[in-house]
Amino acid sequence: SAGRGRRGNAWVSAPGNLYASLLLTEPSAPRDAPQLSFVAALAVHDALSRAAPPLAPALKVKWPNDLLLAGDKLAGILIEAESKPVFTVAIGLGVNCVSHPSDTNHPATDLAAAGAMLTPEQVFAALAPAMSERLAQWRSGQGFASIRADWLKCAAGIGEPIRVRLPERELTGCFQGLDEIGRLLLAGPDGIETVTAGEVFALGPR
Image 1 (tube, one colour):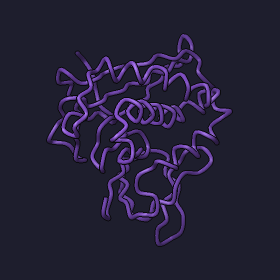
Image 2 (cartoon, one colour; image 1 turned 90 degrees about the vertical axis):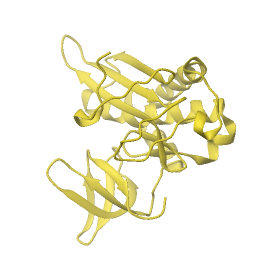
Image 3 (tube, rainbow, N blue to C red; image 1 turned 180 degrees about the vertical axis):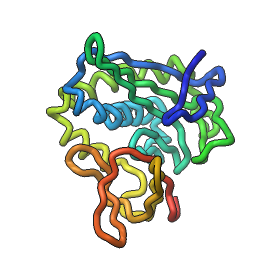
């Protein structure tokens, strides 16, 4: 009843879609917790690939926390943390099962529109074990190198021109991948720049 999107964006929660949160207590050192965006994105990718195999080739992960289907946003992830009384992380997940918002910065879609008639319960049944598997692979940050490698295999836009919206400015360049801690690598006229947080938009063909 009080959901919110990333960076204060509006949150739309029409009936029939999946909305879930995973609460993790002391999942890692605080510095490694942002890596959970990649862990969660892979878990959602795994779950939907298993639940709707025909869609698997068109599923891509988008830095830092979205899942795309044929270039349109299908699922979103929001990571939030609190340090007291103990370090706790909430992973918020939204998957468009039967509907999607129309007035968004990035075009959106849903499973039903793609011909996959899945209920939130069916998606969740696939997501729960997939999340457990990816968390085990991550090993509280010790296994991030393998998470990063798997994420890059299904990443959208590698080698393509993108625009990155930051709080105070915008950058354009070529998406080169991720550094060893998950920051976006952007090749621009002045060389490679690392981006810790921002909103990514494609400039070339999707």
